[in-house]
Length: 209
Image (tube, rainbow, N blue to C red; front, side, top):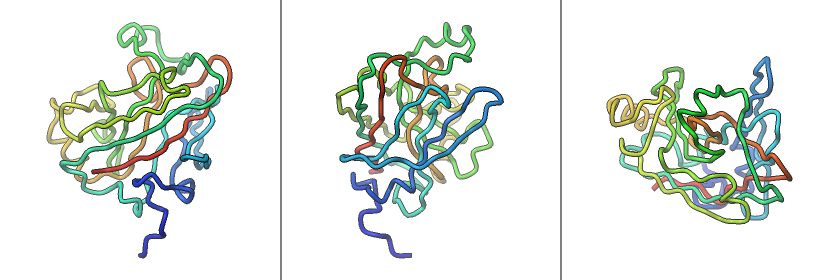
């Protein structure tokens, strides 16, 4: 299949990438997941934060993006900003206070990837400790650069990649989706939204090198 010019968002291009990037959110009980395509911005793609449903993941599983497959020895890099009037953010208030006390992480964004079959706990990975608080992004363009090695990732079961290197390597060798995760507390996708004003997340580039 011939790749359409400009469809490869890994090079920071991407008017056509809006259909390939999805915003995954979780609403109030009965905990309904919703998915919608990205919006186009002047300098990237992204979405507007909302209080309900809570934005949790911003992903692409487009096989033609050049971002998936065997990423052994590779590095993920993303550049992004937040526009709007918001000055404070929070995350899903249903997260237990015990978790909040164990992981007092403010609402943040971090890199994320998953295997083609993500049912197992060890098929979903979050960059740790590499992340930016959402408040730090308002009006600022920042970049996360995270090698796909065992020093920089944690799975959904709160296991460090260094503790389960075989599982981590297997997922890196067969990546089915990449993107970003939003949340606080114990930094898994607890969702995030502004507590005042408006905010839109703009992804300017996402690459594998």
